[in-house]
Each structure stands twice: as structure tokens, then as C-alpha cells.
Length: 133
Image (cartoon, rainbow, N blue to C red; front, top):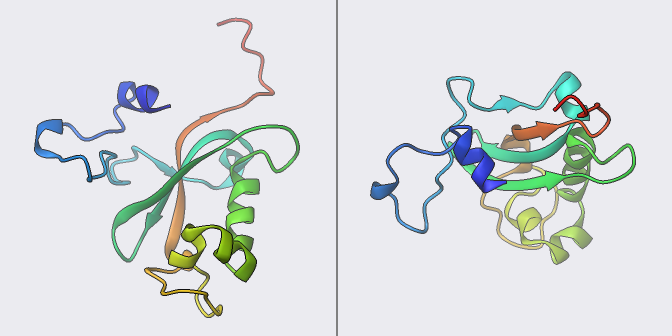
């Protein structure tokens, strides 16, 4: 996935000025990444969460597999539900750091899930015919 994102121009231009702890993804401007809405939500692939308050990428992930929820919309709904669940917060640090605003948390939040936008890093449709390729 990382190599494909490099080939598609989704990373910063001058790698020499970045250190190992910095994010190399471009910011969501100039239509490099699209917010997942509409038909795009039914596809599978790599997604990115961008914090609109901190102006930085927070998380990346992938969605794939069988079933109706193996798409961006399904994964996004799962994250939204989990960000309100104390059980999920105990299991996954992402939800402790980014709970839904107003929900009792098990730790100190560093942001709120409500401030995260889900962007498409790369998408594909397993249901489409790739034979011509």
C-alpha cells in the first residue's frame, strides 16, 4: 500500500527534511485525497483520518473482506460506534485518545472522534471486472 501511495504522489516531495517520527503523507488539499462520501463509501481500500482541529493525520487503516461492512462506510460506522464504547477504549488506545465528544472516557483524550474526517487514500472495487487489465 505504501509503495502505491508513493507512486500516486500522496507523499511529501522533499523527504530529506523529514525525520522518522514525522508523517510523510501530504495534507488533504488540492484534491489529493477525497473525503469518503456517497458511492466512494461502498469501496474498499486504505482510509485516513484527519483531525480538523489539529490539522494533522491521526490514523490510517484498511478495509476489505466479505460482507456489507467490508467497505469504507462499514469501517467508519464501526469506528464511530467504538469511539463511544468503554470496552473498546480499554482494548484500543485510538478510542481513548479520540473518543466521541461528551462520552465518558477511560483516559485523557487528545482529541475527539467528532473532529475526524475520513479520507480515501486508495480505493478499489472487488465487484468490478478486472479481466480487461
